[in-house]
Length: 106
Length: 457
Image 1 (tube, rainbow over the protein chains, first blue to last red):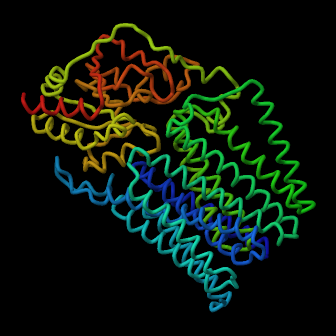
Image 2: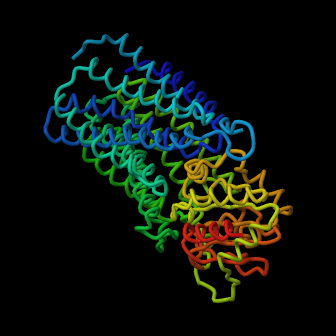
Image 3: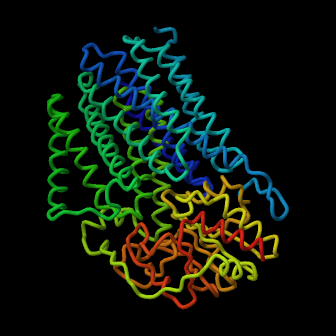
C-alpha cells in the first residue's frame, strides 16, 4: 500500500489532466470521446489479471476469470469500436463543396 | 514471472498512463483522433504485457484463454455493429467494465485488512455494480427491449431509499468485519440501486445516462487502483471519471437541465408525464415530387437530421441530396442538435460516414439565428429536438431543452415514418402547423425518391 498523500497527489493531478484534456475536445467528436474513455477504463483488465493470478481456490479463480473476460471485452472492444468511428472521420476527403480543407473541424 | 522489477513496472505503467492521456488529447481534432486512439490501445497493450512480466502469477494459461475468449467475443461485435447500434454497444462495454471492477474488488476483500482499503473495496463494488445494472437497463431501453418511457411503480422512492440505506449498512459491515457474506449483499444491493436509478429515466435522457455511467465505471476503476495499490488503474480511472463528468455536464446543459433533474426528475413525479395519445387532427401530407420542387427552387435549405435517419441508414442518400441541391445553386446546411440521436455527437459520426464536409454542419447556436432567412427546414427522422413543447409547455419532459427553431423558417418539411411521437413520448405541435408538410415513409426511401425527383427537375 502506497503512502496516502502520494496517492492523493496522483488523483488530484489526474483529475486536472482529465478536465483539461476533455474540455478541448470538439463537440463533433463527443461520441468517440465517450467510446474512447470507455475503452480506457477497460484497463481494469490489469487488476483482473492480478486477482486471477493470485486466486488459490477454484471458485475464486472462476470469478476472477469472468472478470478477465468482461474486462477484455471492455478494453479490446472499446478500442476497436472507437477506431471504427474515427476511421470515418479520418477518411474525410477535403471539402467536396466549397474550398479549403475541411479537415480541422473548426 | 517477475522479470521486471518494481521500478521498471512503475515506469511502464507511467508510459501506459501517458498513452491514455494522449488518446484523449488526440480527440481535440478529427485529424489526430485516430492516431490518438491507436496510441491508447498501444498503452493498454504495454500495461497488460507489463503485468504478466512483473507480478507473480499463477494460472497464466487460463488467464490467457480468458483474454482470448473476451477478445473473440468483443472484436467481431465491435467490427460489425451498425452505426445506429453504437450507443448500445458503448453502454454494453461500459457495463461489463463496471462488472469486472466490482468482481475484482470482491476478490481483493480477503487481502485487505486496512479499513481505508476496505472502504475503497466497498466503493468499487457498489459503483461497479450500479454501473453494470444501470448499463444493462440502458442497453434494454436503447434496443427497445424495455419501454423507453420512465418506468415507475408506487412507493419507488421508498424502495430506493431502503436500498441506499441497506447498501450503506452492508458497506459499513464489510469495512468492519471483512465478511464475504456482507460483500455479496452489498453487490446485490448495488445491482438493485443501478436498476432503480435508470428505470425511471425517460428515453430522451438515455444518452446522458450512458455518459454518467461511463464516469461511474471510471471512478470504480480508480478506486480499484487504491485496492490493488496500482497507480495505473488509479490514474486511468480518474481520467475517465473526470472526462465522463465533464461530458455529462456539457450534455445536460445542452438539454437545458441539471444532471440531478434528469436522474431524479421522475421520482418527483409529474414532470415526465407527456402525452402518448396520438392525435387524429389533420396534417398536410405531401409527395416526393412536391418536396423536390420545394427544395429545388429554394435559396436556402437547412437539414435537421435525427435518429430516424440513422435507423434508415439514409446518411449517404441525404449527402447526395445535399450535393444535388448545391449543384442547383441551393445553399444547404445541416443543423445538428447536440443530443440528436442516441449519443452526444451521434449525427456527426453518421454524417462523417457519408463524407459531408464539416463546414456544412452547424451547431445549435450557429444554426438558430439563421432559420428566419431559411426557405425550408427539412427535418429527417428528428422530432424531440425541434419540438416547440420544449419552450411552450411547462411540464413536458423536454421543457427547457434548447431546440432547433425550425418554425422560424418559411416552410417546414418533415420526413417521418409515422405520427408516432419521438423518443421522449410527446406530441409535436409543429406537425399540425399550416406551414408544415409531411412526407411519410422510411427516411431512406423517401430521400431516394426526393433525390430522384430533384435530379429530374
